[in-house]
Amino acid sequence: MALPLEGLTAIVTGAGRGLGRAEALELARLGAAVVVNDYGQPGRDGSGQASAGPAEEVAAEIRAAGGTAVAHTGDVADHAEARALVESALEEFGKLDILVNNAGILRDRMIFSMSEEEWDSVVRVHLKGHFNTSHFASVHWRQRSKAAGRPVYGRIVNTSSEAFLAGSAGQPNYAAAKGGIVGLTTSTALALAKYGVTANVICPRARTRMTEDVFAGLARPEAGPDPLAPEHVAPLVGYLASPAAARVNGQLLVVHGGMVAIVERPRVAAKFDTKQDVFTYDELDALLTAHYADRPDGETFAAVEVLGLRHGGG
Figure 1: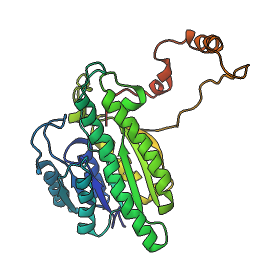
Figure 2 (figure 1 turned 180 degrees about the vertical axis):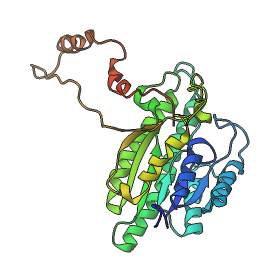
Figure 3 (figure 1 turned 30 degrees about the vertical axis):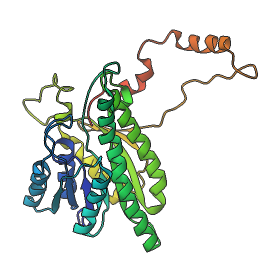
Figure 4 (figure 1 turned 90 degrees about the vertical axis):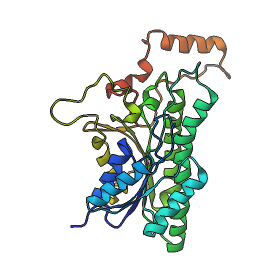
């Protein structure tokens, strides 16, 4: 029996460690040929010398298990290197079918302490990196669709975070970039649907180099699987990359430890209409101050907390 992704080619960015590695292994297990991308810097803040080692190790691991994989070590936040990444998939395998964006760094700081460089570097890697690869992949799919005169196969799986959903006081750069990725994904989903391409975004929670301090107080269980293992996230990525997910488009899903939650778009919580032609300050004061007067701090995120969602992951 054919594997779900047999005959398909995938790119996974940030795939040398953690979530990206687990996702690359899962796509390969499901039959895809994988381009394993990782810039290879040792620091989770993007510091240190870039290295081909992490990407090459994962590619070798896939090949040792009987799969097909090549390594790519470019910086996806660099527009030209993102183009080269997509071109490498086309040169090696003849086409691209799946793009999983996972590359990212952290430079945590409170808003009043954050430097311009700390802001720019995180937004560059996460948000611009997602845009760069998605741009060149979408050019490829659009050209293929026009040449064929019909929709083609294309899947984008982007990575956001619960830091966007519930806030994260020490991560204004990261939370903003992850929120931007959600907007990028929904826009991409609408733009590419007619070409046969879907774009979805996940908010994963996993114990990785990126989140080691977030989950420092949650020890790995002595027996049984770790609920924060990246392997809990990878199957959802494999599903979203598959033909079975053809009707899943523009969706945001939270995933961790055996749980998947589909997050709805924001809904109106309350609505007020002026009794005059234009609102006055006094009218707004009477309506809105009363509305918020009896609400405890943090109730804005009540719907998020029901799911047990907290910042971290991704």
